[in-house]
Image (cartoon, rainbow, N blue to C red; front, side, top):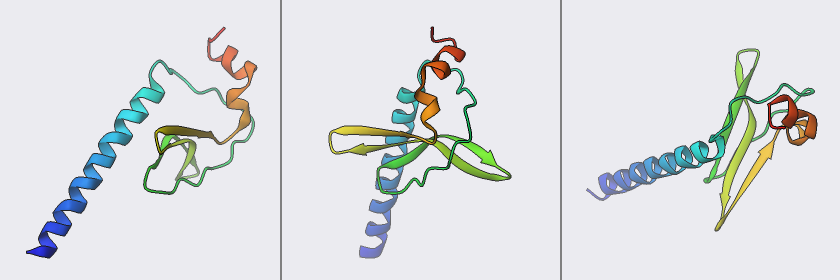
Length: 97
């Protein structure tokens, strides 16, 4: 019985974490219609209990994280696989001004 409760607690915790990721991903992508192609982006290593891929692309047939995010205490962190995603040219080519 103790094992069953432990497994149930782990499943509930995992589903809550996925729900948090889905909410965070939706908030981060609100209003985003495209991500311009810039340079040669690397791949991000996404790890940790509160980290998740926001956007992925394919390298051959393997998915690679291009944008990742994580909760860090009361804050949030976002990482991009290429600095060009944050450049003025990238913003303008996406119709941002």
